[in-house]
Image (tube, rainbow, N blue to C red; front, side, top):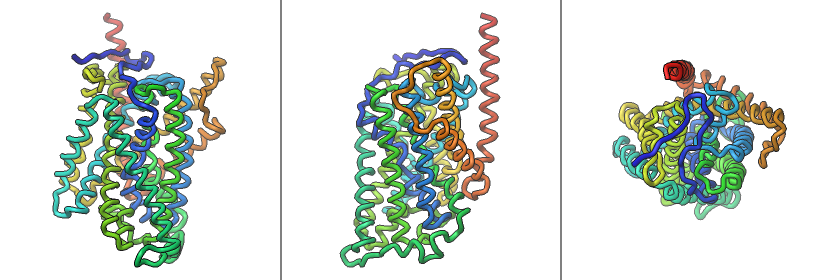
Length: 471
C-alpha cells in the first residue's frame, strides 16, 4: 500500500520517505546522463548553424556558468540533502513563492525536455528506417522509460549508469578519432587539417553577435547540470557523492562539448551541418558519414540514440521527484506523495508522463519542426530555474554568515561575485531568447506561465489560511 506524508504550504521542506539506495558511481553517472543528451548531439547542429565555427567560444563561455551552478548547488545540497533538491532550498531561503515557482517551472521545463529527448530518439531511429513514422518509436521508448522509472531506485541507478557510460566512452573515442582524422588522416582519407574553421566565410561568418545568439542553444546543452542536486535525497552518502559528482560532471562536460565541437567544425563545413528548418540528423553522425565510415556512422547513431534515452530517463527521474517534493510540501495534490512498495514515487511519475503525450502529438503534427519547438519551450523555464538557484545561493551564504553557522564543506570559489556574474549571464541569455527565431515562442509562453504559477501560489495560500481559520 502507498504511503504519503508532508507539511502544509509555507511549512518547512520535508525530505519524505525516499530510499537512499544510490551509490556514488550511480550518482555521478546520473548527473552525466541528465546533461549529455540532445543538447549536444542534435541541438548542436542549430548552434553551429547560427554561429559557425565560433560556436566553440559559445560552448566554452557557457561552461563557466554551468561550473558555477554545479558548485553552488553542491555547496547547498550537502547541507540540505532533501527530496526535490534545490526546490526545498529555494523555499527555505527565499520563501514559499520561490519554492513553489522553482519546482513547478522546473517540472514544466523538464517535462517538455523529456518530450524533446524522445522526439530526438525517434529521429535517430529514422536514420536507419527513414520511412518509419516518427510516432511509433516515440510511443515505444516512452513506455520503456516509464517502466524503468517505476522500478526501485537502485535498479534505475544501475540502468542509468551503464546507459550514461556508453555515451561517455563513445564521446572520448569520437574526439580521439576526430583529432586523428584532423592531424594524421584515416585509411583512404587524408588529414583534413583545420581549414574548415576559416574556409567557409571565416571563423566568425555571421559576426560576433551570432555567437551571443547561439548561446541560447548552447546554454540548453548544459541544462541538466542541476539534476545532480535531486539525487541527494536518495544517495547513500550525499555529503561525499554529490560534490564529487558535480565537480566531475562539469569538467567532463566542458571537455566533451568544447573538444567535440572543435572536431565537428574542423572537419565539416559549418554551413552543411544542418539548417534551422531541418534539424533531423546529429552533426556527429554526419561527420562519420563524411569520413566515409558508414559502419561508424551507424554505431555513432546508436550511441546518440542511447544518449537521448539516457537523458530522457534521468529527466523522468527528476520530474517525478520534483512532483513528489511538491506534494509532500502541500503544493501539489497529496495523492502524488504516495510511494510504491519499492520506494518509487509512481504516482508522481504519472504526471510527468504528460510530456511524452505532448511529444507524441507534436511529432505526428509537425515532424520536421518538433525538436526546435520543444527545445524553445523548455528553455525559458530552465533558465528561470538557474536564476532562482543562484538567488538561493546568495541567500544561503548571507544566512549562514548572519547566524555564524559553519561554512559548507564545498564552496563556490569567488562567491558571491561568481554567483552574481553567473546570474547576469543567465539573465542576459534569457533576455536574448525573443530575438532568436527558434526560441521566441518560449518567451511568449514562459512569461504567462510564470504569472499563472504566481497566481496559483497565492490562491493556495489563501485556501490554506481559510482552512486553518475554520479548523
